[in-house]
Image 1 (spheres, rainbow, N blue to C red):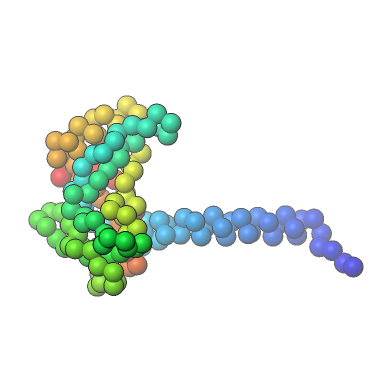
Image 2 (cartoon, rainbow, N blue to C red; image 1 turned 90 degrees about the vertical axis):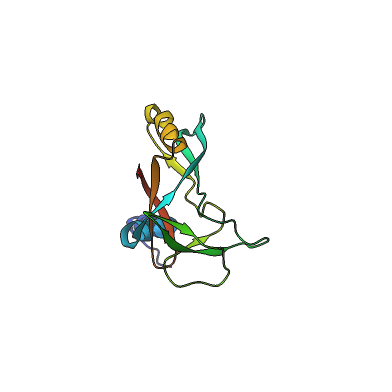
Length: 150
């Protein structure tokens, strides 16, 4: 019986692990690279988790809750002045732009920041001075890019 040489097994293992890593980050990568930018109103929830480092936990007052008992839903986006907001959640894929969501925050709930900036960002969000800039790809997958002045 003929076996593969050791370098072939190592190369195969590296390729499988690389494919798994790409599969895990593909939705965020797709949104980050191909998505269009939208600005949403944000509100703070919890600024610091001592076990995970400094971050601002965000909520989105312009995004509605999903339908009761729904595992996944879509939120069509409409312009509201200089920002965008969600209309009522739907279970059928709408026309673009929309978010594909599993929860109220649509996966956009944490923004990691340097520890020394977390409190200042929280204060700016409380004072309604910041907006979240997200990128959304053509499948409604979204990623939080940055917080910027309104």
